[in-house]
Image 1 (cartoon, rainbow, N blue to C red):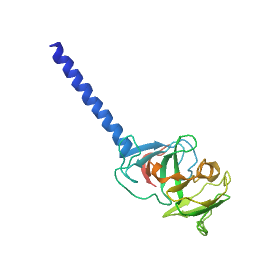
Image 2: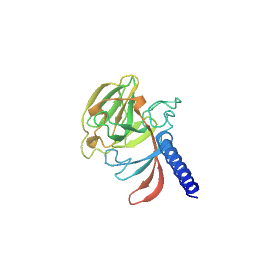
Image 3: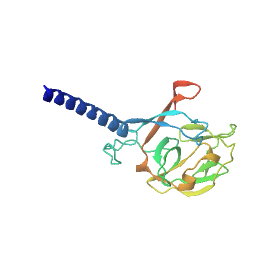
Image 4: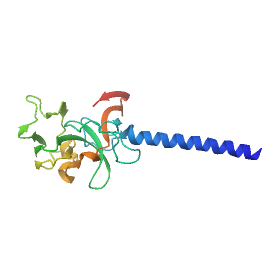
Amino acid sequence: MMQTRTRRIMREVLVLGVLVVGILAARSTLADHYHVPSGSMEYTLMIGDRVFVDKRAFGLRVPFTNIKMTQGDSVERGDIVIFDSPRDGKRLIKRIVAVGGDTVEIQAGHLAINGESLAVVDQAGVERIGSKLVQLKLASGGGPNLSGMVEPGTVLAVGDHRGNSTDGRIFGAVPEREIYGRAVAVYYRRGDGFGWIGL
């Protein structure tokens, strides 16, 4: 009787363990969420936003590793992505403003790629980055200036709140393989509650 009960408990613990590992593996390779801790991406992302992240976007990975099993999409200008800071390992969310081979210039917070300004005429503080129209926040100034070329295989990630963002202007370009996933939507915003704001 005691052995039967022990076996049943062990079976339940095993099933629970497999379930927990399965959930963690799914978060590691398929989809996850991100809590926005700072205003570095305002006005696109606000402090406290909860963001849905597609971890399959740039290639399916072996769970708990950076080893890719599938190729996935290339990281593109305008994508909002998740990666670890090369400076201190902190998980960050930023916008890709340039990809390998691009020549970049950022002056007073305004971006030019390959010699062309991304500013939208007649819309103050708005830039077209890739396919996205981005409303910048320049209330704190433009932050560090930058001029140079992005090396092949890397991407430059910068915050939309240019004067309040520790980003690629400080720690440099990030290897494309280090990008975990693409931010798809804000699913919770403080004050508004649950919803779906596509990014």
